[in-house]
Each structure stands twice: as structure tokens, then as C-alpha cells.
Amino acid sequence: MSGIIWLLAAATSVVHVGAVLYVEPEQVHLSYGALPTQMLVTWTTFDPTNDSLVEFGKDGLDMQARGHSTKFYDGGSERRLIYIHRVLLEDLTPGEFYVYHCGSTMGWSATFWFRAKNASALWSPRLAVFGDMGNVNAQSLPFLQEEAQKATIDAALHVGDFAYNMDSDNARVGDEFMRQIEPVAAYVPYMTCVGNHENAYNFSNYVNRFSMVDRSGRVNNHFFSFDIGPAHIISLSTEFYFFVEYGFLQIKRQYEWLEQDLKEATRPERRRERPWIITMGHRPMYCSNNDRDDCTMNESIVRKGIPLVHLYGLEDLFHKYGVDLEFWAHEHSYERLWPVYDRQVYNGSVEEPYKNPGAPVHIITGSAGCQEKLDPFVKNPAEWSAARFSDYGYTVMTLHNGTHLSLQQFSVENGLQLLDEITVIKESHGAYPSRKASK
Image (cartoon, rainbow, N blue to C red):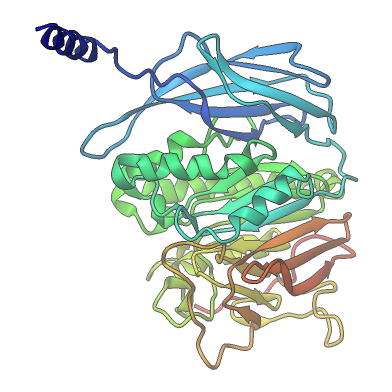
């Protein structure tokens, strides 16, 4: 009889166990603020907390900043509720190291560190650049984690396509991917642009999970820009041109914003200070891959704009304002182009093609690793294609000064191996010679 009573008591105790509480911060990541004295910290919890706090300092956690949380309901069948917390750190000393943790009195993250952005245009930052990195087969990720924690990179530029896909399994794949990148993104700013794999529910996972701010300080993950060292970097959405079910006006609005941003960046005093203008967008204007993607077409939509009417094409706009370098992804490979405009090569010279080139340089870096594997190339590429590699890896850009930047492509298939390297030299920056584009 006593055994039966014990079993009943045990069963009763199991029934009355409380629900699990998910208030510990996770998926911590950094992004630049509108000013070099700012850094934005973003993280996730799955239950509400009583506050959104970051404790930080140069020698210890002796300062505190307070932010807010927002509710994000994923569009999947479960309508999962995720709490996104954002805290802006201000009055940082440019170039100084800080330690921090985030959370609330209900629970704190581990302690991380970052270096505040150096405000000087004479700074020479080193950035990792890559796209198309998934939860599965993210072959570049361990190397990027090590680069971030050894402080060999100052920021990461993820050029679209995350997790494959962030919305999958009611956004649980997105959660796990954000946990995977935390060993990178909690230490260096993880700056992004949107790709086609983020399109579900009007790009809601991408829009809610990241915190890219425009020059006014508002979060705008689709298009924004920032200064770093001698460069002005512009992030944009190529996806507006393809997912028109979410609205046509977004193409026009982004294009108008792009032109205004380029006008500001090319004011003489601005261009003298930050001479390099660099863009990043997911789908390329050109590529040599053996598929039927937009970039394989003679008149790609990204390059020439809306078909037939040729409105809002990006190539003429970037040529007009003298964009120096354009990063793309989408193709699961690496390709370096000669300086190109309207399918014509404009090398600086035969001996030094990237010295004072007559058109922008394009780099396609979409081989960080995902479940869709690598993309092959055609056997006979066009004359504008300079180098092609179907290896898993990522690009590193070093902005040496106002006249020199270097680009290195590393393969991660057998350790870290250098595949490709160039130095782009621009003794003067500005609009390219006026040329009549083909119709």
C-alpha cells in the first residue's frame, strides 16, 4: 500500500512541474550605429524579460545601457513568438576595446568583447566578405569564428542568403543559424544585405532579426550605408526587383535613396575623406555560372532594370557616380571580373589592369557553404571574367588607404589556402568617362 501512495505522490509532483522559462539571452550580435561612437547589440529570448540591458566597459562591466524588446511572430504554422532585444551603446571611445554582456536581472549572456569603430579615414580595416552561408555545410564558419575571436578581422559583410532558410521549421533553423554565427557576430559587427532565401513572409525573419541602421539611426535592413576607414559602403536589396508581389514602389524608393546616398558620398569634400565607394547586393549583374540565373542573361534585371522599360537599373547609376567596387553573391562560387561596364572591359592597362581602372570591379563571393553545394561555371566565359573558383571559402578585403585596397580569396577546403589576390589602385576617384550604354 505504501508503494502505491509513493507512486501517486511522484505522479502528482510531475504534473505540477512549472513550464520552462526561456529568458537567457542568445543569438547575440553586433552592428554599427549611425555614429562611430555607437554600437548596437541585438539578442533573442523566447519569453519576455523585465528589461533589456547591456553592461559594458573598458576594464570591467562598470557602465550600463538600456534598450527595448519587440515581439516578432514568425509567419509559419506555429506562429512562434520571439523577443528581439536591441540596446544602443553610445559615447564609446573610437578604436578602444570594450567587454560586455547583455540580458536582464532575469539572466545574463556570457561576456564578449568588441573594438569600437575607429573614426579616422586613415584607419586600414580588414573585413571578411561572403554570402550564401547556411546552417548545414557552413564550411567557412569555423574559420570566420577564429578570425573574429583572434581579432584578425574588424567586421563581417554577409552578402545575402542566411541559414537556408531562416523561416524553415517555424524559424527554428533561423534560431540555430543565429546561434552558429554568435562566435563571429558577438565580437565584430556583422553587417548584412538581404538575399532571395530570406523572402518568406515578406522577408520577416531577416527584417526582425538584424539591426542595420541608416544615417538617421533608424533600423532599415533592406538598404543603408556606413563609413569605415577610407570607404563608404552601401548595402542594398536586389530582391525588390524579383519579389514584386510585395510591392513595386519599393524598387523606386530604394533607387531614389541610392542616388541621394551616392550624391552625398560624392560631394568633393566627402569623397576626399572617404574616396572608396563600395556596394554590396545579393544577385550579381554578371556571372559565368552554368545555370539560368539573372546574371547569366545579356540584359540582367539588376544591371539594366525592369525589363522592356529599363527603369531603375543599377549599372548606369553606379557608373555615373564612380562606384569603385561591387560585391555580390547568390552564385555558389567565387568569380573576379575585370573592370567592366556594359559588358565591355575597361582595364587600367595591359600590365596593371586594376590600376586606375575605367569601370567598377565586380567580385562574386557566394561560396561560404550551404546545403545547395557549389555552382559550376560555363566552359567558355565572356572576356570580362578574370578568375573563377568553385571552392568553399570567403573573401578578405583590406582598405589600406585612399588609393590602395587588396582583395584575397581563401579556400577552406583543406585548411586556409589563398586562391586569388589582387590590389586595386585608384590614384583619383570620381565619375567614369561618359559612355553610351547599349539598349
